[in-house]
Length: 167
Image 1 (cartoon, rainbow, N blue to C red):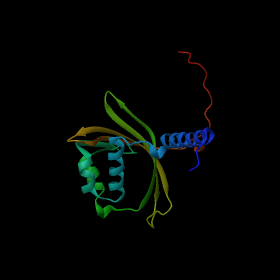
Image 2: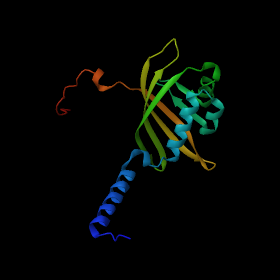
Image 3: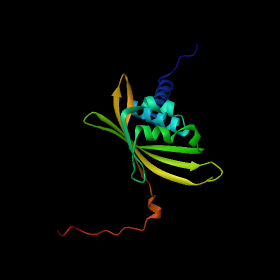
Image 4: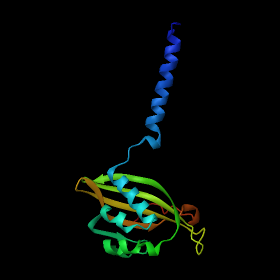
């Protein structure tokens, strides 16, 4: 049996240390929060137009502010996602912020939708969604959501600095 020298062992240690760093710095290695997991399940159920799968994820007094400013109740949201209203979409999402305020969990994500149904194929829209969670009966429920239309900066006219306030 060959005896390892110190340089062989230090090389192995370096590789193990690099692998460990890659694992902990990798976004896929990050643990999801209970709110993030509930929102993932909620978005999957919305995308599949399955209100029965959505219902246990929403608080009894859930409400949602749509991108056009409508305030929808839990019942209105669930009826919107009835299977008869189904529309094929592809959803790509990016977590922008995950925090809590006074112990209340808040999640903000960028949601990029591409419509796939023949009448609207290829149409795209991006929203910023924010969800507020609440632990209920050993699970995280979503009690509030707000969606805002996202306009990428490349479509905005450049903003000029206004200088200091002179009030």
